[in-house]
Amino acid sequence: MGIFDRMHISYYAADRRAALEHRCDILGVVGYGTTTAWQGRAPYVAVALAPAGPPVYEVIAGGRVLSAVRDGVHYAHDGEWLFAAVAVGACERIAVAAAEAYGRILRIAEGEGYGYLIRAWQYFPDIHAPDEGLERYRQFNRGRHRALEGYLAQGGIRPAATCIGTSGGALTLHVLARRTPGTAIENPRQVCAYRYPDTYGPQPPDFVRAMKVVGDGREWLWISGTAAIIGHESQAPGDLEAQARETFANLDTLVACADLGDDRQVLAVKVYVRGHDQVLPSWPQPWKTAPVLTLRGDICRSELALEIEAVVVGGPRGARP
Ligand code: 3EB
Image (cartoon, rainbow, N blue to C red; front, side):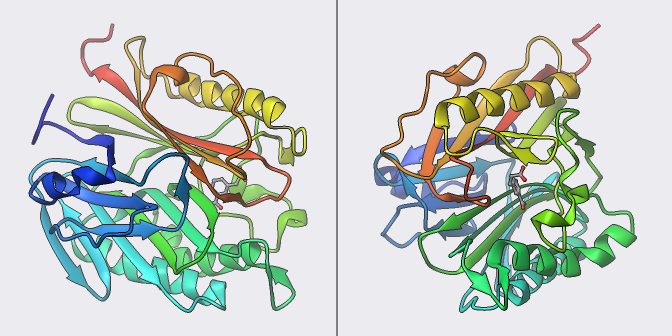
């Protein structure tokens, strides 16, 4: 496994930046708590979420990439994957900003022939604040849906997603897209998010619980931000320990439903917690041996104390009975 071999996700301390900037196999870089300017060719997005430790670069690597900037969207593609990132500033009206961000990304992805969204990360400040009588997260869902309507009508599949409130800055959206559709995996313990009742807002959130794709001869499972929700209801309000148990049960269920084979491996995990003072309970396998990045952020329901996302890869395809 190495450069130009396959999709990979790694977390690097920010002092490794100079070495990363020279690489030509990087689809995208996400900075958390970083302060120095990124100078590489790879698309870069800074997210205002503080890591539990020193500043971190998350590197999503692929094959040899072509990169470009168009319409404010920084993107790179390797023939199999396209990474695209956009920041929309002055996002007082978050529905407008969300529609703008998704609209611009979709135009680039479709124009470059990567017409299927697989994974989306959405970060913006003041997620619980009101905006024209509706919580900003709920307004965000309206704008996202407006932008995705055409995509869905043409047979597009909702991506797996994460949506977290930041401490400031722009709305940032970054995605991974492919030339062919993935397979949506839903969690039988949970209602599909896009069928949530309207007690959670007039427009349900457009994401699937996980997306499975075949690439580089393997099966990949991109798991959405996952929380202690059963059915559509949050469990154990404010109780980190109990919520962690339910969250791992949800993650385990998604992995089981995806049928990745016995030699599956957790490639990377991100944990979002409301406060750094909160001590995470001990983790069960297979999650505890994977590289983990812990970030402080606002989970989109105020009673939720943590949310966990992950990427799991199956063994080489064809090796299975
Ligand atoms: C949930 O399960 C928790 O709006 O894109 C998780 C992942 C959540 C993605 C989104 C929201 C989103 O409803 C919140």
